[in-house]
Length: 135
Image 1: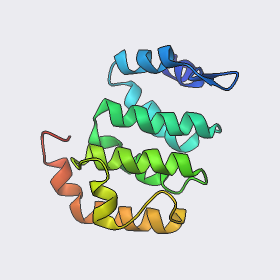
Image 2: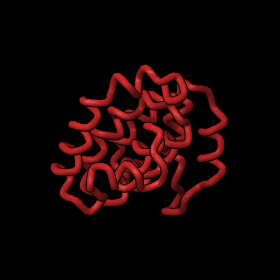
Image 3: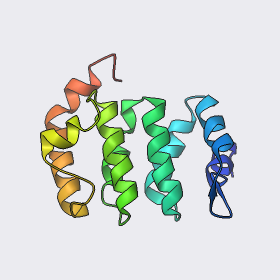
Image 4: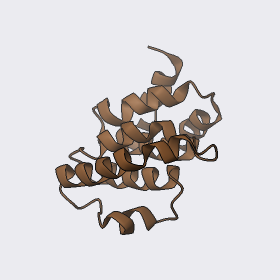
């Protein structure tokens, strides 16, 4: 198990959030981003998946958007919420602007939420990827 994986697994200890671990993951290098992208989808702990979405938002790397879109299928409403917020932020929207544009929210069924955001991404991906302030 790699260093980043150990840190991600340590985000919660006995059910309590570990701010120091979060901060250490933000101080790391960009190699943590692919690990977070995997864990936002695959980690068995919904609290960790939710926190990975927050970390991806805070890393400010729009290359994480496809993984965050996959996280919109999550059964946990809070994972979907933070993934949706992260996508909006990473694509240059103000808080709530992305959700308003697409008329979606984290309480929408995961399938509907995924479809709406994925359709938007397919139509706008090139703009986001070619915008040096976002990518």
